[in-house]
Amino acid sequence: MMLIMAETITIEVYHGGAWHDAFDVTFSEPAGGFASRTTAAYRNEYVGEHVDQLGSVQEHAVGVRYPVDFEVWAQEAWPAFLLDVMPSGAARRWWRRRLATRDLTENELSFKLLRDHTTSPIGNLRVKSERPDIQPVAFSKEDVCRRDVSFLDYAIESGAAIGGATGAGGDAPKVLLVEDADGNVYPEGTLPDEAVRKSWLVKWPRGQDRDRDRLVLYAEHLYAEAMATIGLDIRVGEHHKFEDSKPSVWFPRFDRLPTEQGLERLAVESFYSMAGISVHGASATHFEYIAALMQVCEADQREDFVSEIICRDILDLIVGNSDNHGRNRAIIRNGGIRLAPYYDVAPMVMDPEGVVRTSRWGDFERGGQIDWVGVFEHVGQWADELTVRENVQRFASQLLDLPDALRDLNLPDEVFDFPRIHLKDARATLKQWGLL
Image (cartoon, rainbow, N blue to C red; front, top):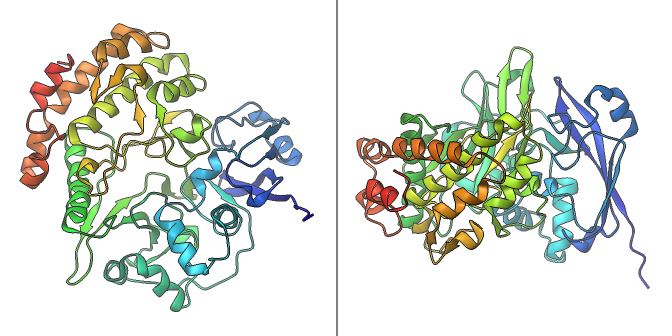
């Protein structure tokens, strides 16, 4: 009989300009996958040093389900926030090829990636590990653009550490980079904080890099620019295309803020983590996310949060963004709880692989039709129904400016004309839904 050895990792939390050893997670069966038993707790010395934060779920905590406390959490699954920080999607596939880990099962690979390759992900958490002292190696943006995701192999062959470059999840190839004052770029986590001037999430077409894949990425870039034009909270990227290279979009990261005191890392947590869902790509209802958010927000935030979750789904439906899973929505936990800016808004109904909605309105969404009256009535258990309805109607009116903003940016007709994208008939659609 083979003896299974438990293993413990330490989560470091960044706040106050420094990293802190904060939270230990013990895996009873490391190779058991996300559904294996874990025991987790804050370190006593961490709680003692932050006794003024007892019960807090803001930046000092690892997540909203784990307030700073002396409590021990025993679960039949990994803590959901771990899935936020570990490499996944395209990054996971890259690591499997790079590590030549054909002898590892998917579950074994999951733990290895968490333990050994979660050094500088999005947000303010990381897994404590040995970090070799390697001199940063600079690259140009053209270096990155010409090599697309193979840039990571090129960086390693050039003697660079890749740090947390693979810390962004999702099926589209992405890398996390930072830029210095001279415009050189480096893998995330390899340049000293004081030298960082900009932080980037670089994204390439997903799938087989067909013309349609490239169009979806370009439309995502234009969507962001148009959404910002009409006053929505989103970061506008840079679209790059060099000769004989794949196109890429460089999105400024909203979780990194260069300050005079150093690089501030914001506590970002996905809706999946907030709701305690430890499964990639799981289906859930928007009501589950609302209920989880209501547990941690202030009473005077309820109407705004409920309204915003509804509004963001309406936007997704108008622009054809079917990739609405719980890791494409997030909260920020610094100095209170707020929704993260919009991100990953693209016409995914055009994706050749067929991306379906995984976040829905429960019994109020059937056959592609949503009973908005029923949705408003249902959310009345958390917030004033009339206020929410008025907020959503104002947002719907704001959306009427989006098609013209996209025309001004020359969004291709192929996107406007695609079935299940309602940009051409936005007014009629919103009226039909009773939102105007």
